[in-house]
Amino acid sequence: MINILTSTIADMSLWLSLHANLAYAILFFGSYFETVVGPGFFIYGELFFLPGAILAGAGFLNIWLVALATISGGILGDYTSYEIGRKHGHRIFRFGNKYFSPENHEKGKVFFKKHGPKAIFFARLLGPFSWITPFFAGTYGISRRTFFAYNIPGVFAGIGEFLVVGYFFGTSYGAALQFIQQKLAYILAALFVLFSTYYIIKRNDPEFFIRLGIALHLIKKD
Image (cartoon, rainbow, N blue to C red; front, side, top):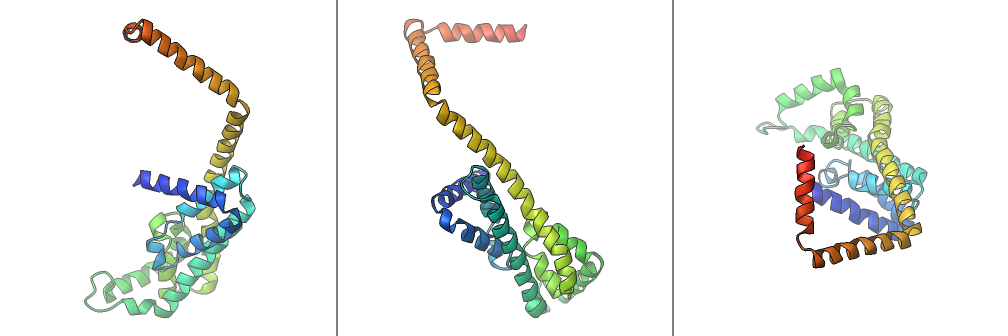
């Protein structure tokens, strides 16, 4: 799963770097739909937050525009889920449904009455809960004023953590790439000497590396 996620992030980063003119729009809509109830079950925000920030750190995108696109998309996506819950949330609770039963509806109402504001804020830091909490906040009648007061800081914190990590990773990557480009001739020369030496020794003294390995093992053991 981690390999798939890493590969997807790399592919997304490559695509965004090749389509910089569309990158900010893609980041906005990706951030929007990843938290809308329904599509948010299939879309992972990390696939947009991290590539955008990494490319900004590497100098391909503007970090302020990346932040504007992802954070505004997240706020609007959460608000869309909130309004859906406010208007239609009560319809999912029916008799005979194991999870959305009237009993669970009452438990949810008690929970949101007691912990609603904190849940709205911390949901953005708890991954899988980020896309469903705004929906339930609307379903259980949290006021818009309270919702925005806790949701907006939560979005800044939740998305911001990915942007900071991605940006500094991209900065390091960009610096490393620039160093490699500047010192490419020296790096290739060093690799040529290294592999040539290895080939010559291997050809003329096949047991050299075996003896070297044994010697290093004995030194380490002592």
